[in-house]
Length: 374
Image (cartoon, rainbow, N blue to C red; front, side, top):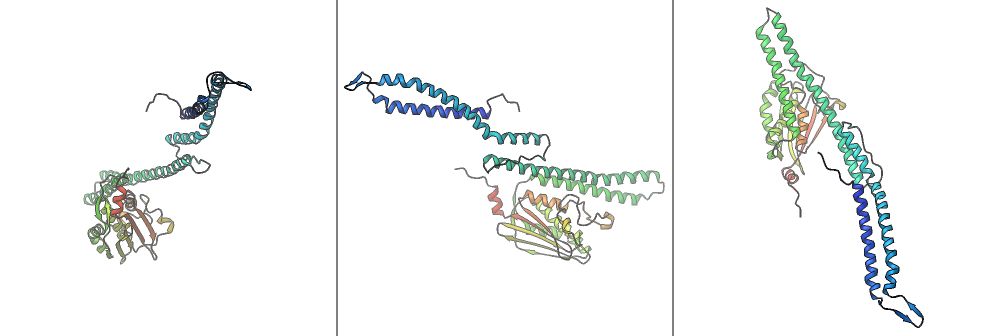
């Protein structure tokens, strides 16, 4: 926004230093006048020893020198204040340059302000931390956009190719073509809805409501139990009530994604265990499943969009609910939006253990409550 030019902070500080110095000097002169000169008689003073200066003599001798001292004090305080303000504000120049570079897109620049801890260095360190997080977020968004465009382009290109082949093939099987197009279109719709859900969770656009994670986990299990039975999996659920505050729609999606991920990435005859409990100031939802062995270096990347627990497998080979590679990414985003923490580790013998920690209802309410100003 446009602003009218004004004095710099350095000039304001220098003038403030000078004003304080002149004010203190004036107060000292006033003290001299009030407590010393006022008690000196104004008339001629003579003693047997000779002439004694009266108040007028002292004023004529003192005032010109006091005036000259005030002028030197004013000039010295301005020069010294200008120099001191420059030294004090030097870190702000580095912060300003870094801010302008960041505004131009140079997020890899860091202030790295040297010296001992103070308010300006705390500001610089906080700004560096913000830049690091912003750089990581932008890099993640770029990867996500590239992966999303690739994932969306694949089904659309496949449908386009199938339609072009069908046009030139007089003996085409219309029913098989329609079935295949329906499958590809359903996958594209699922991907689009997942992207919209991910965007909504990132914006945290919801009004917190009291919810119980244990009930949401039961709801997700009931919905996905037929799929688990078709795959020959054993499902076990249990635990204690886990009250928290949040979006029921997003949290039930979180629970569904975790259960679905545990069912899809499993082995025939495997198990899925869902547990909830309250531990101090947090409530936990733990989903544990058997499955293929997951390398430790891959576990850290599972929450990235379009990452799967194993190499990419064709939808036809994985059957229904193949997923689009956004399940755990959505879980992480929903967890962050609720100020929680997501932990994933490889299970001994294969599979994963996914743990979601969210603040309890009373803790979440206390964090959301505005601080009282006395």
